[in-house]
Length: 254
Ligand SMILES: NC(=O)c1ccc[n+]([C@@H]2O[C@H](COP(=O)([O-])OP(=O)(O)OC[C@H]3O[C@@H](n4cnc5c(N)ncnc54)[C@H](O)[C@@H]3O)[C@@H](O)[C@H]2O)c1
Image (cartoon, rainbow, N blue to C red):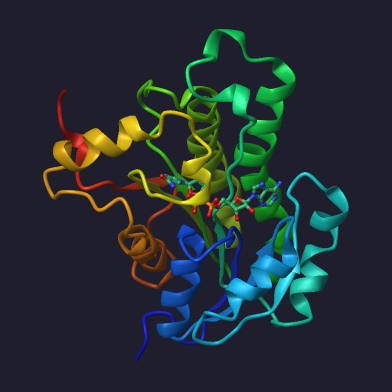
């Protein structure tokens, strides 16, 4: 028996094989789920990466800033799966001016882009998938602990604070549909999104030392496994929760 036997999942956010979402899709397939991916931008690249999964899944296009993509998402997913039991939001983006110590000078336009893609899209994606979730299910998003002001993370930190709040309101409004909404707050991982953060090295240097369990910057499996657990039937009464998968850093004093 696999943890996700028979589950039908939509996984967003695969860009490379170091993407957190890649490991979510891989482990989910290994645990018995049927998976559809969404890809953004370089769709041929996502399709190439998808071929590295145990069972190459269909890839459909989704730019979360494109209302046509969102409006047609359920129909396009419905061509491959007769419903959804789980949705994974593994999407984040902020223009360079939002990151790296420019906090006091970032323009609203750039902040608006960061919040649109990284925060509001959690709601947009969940609502777009609602017609396929008639039997309830789980929505899981990827977070970076937003209870603190970090070095260099700047407006992305504000966007993540919004994501944390958004997940609680979604949990409130989707509970009556039998849908659980939770976040996994991962420690720093060397993905493409992380490489685009100027000064990310600051996290890399300190995290493994500060984590009581230690921390491997290249291993997305712990975060992916937590996503699988939240997508499974083993958290039936948990919603609006944030599970920290950070080696324990969030619980430590300075
Ligand atoms: N890498 C880390 O250190 C870390 C830590 C905690 C949380 N996270 C979060 O994990 C999630 C996944 O990031 P990752 O680290 O795997 O990096 P990644 O670069 O592999 O994934 C980011 C994804 O966002 C997608 N994306 C960007 N703009 C989009 C848009 N307009 N529409 C649809 N998709 C879009 C990209 O195509 C990419 O697949 C993000 O929410 C990120 O903030 C990452």
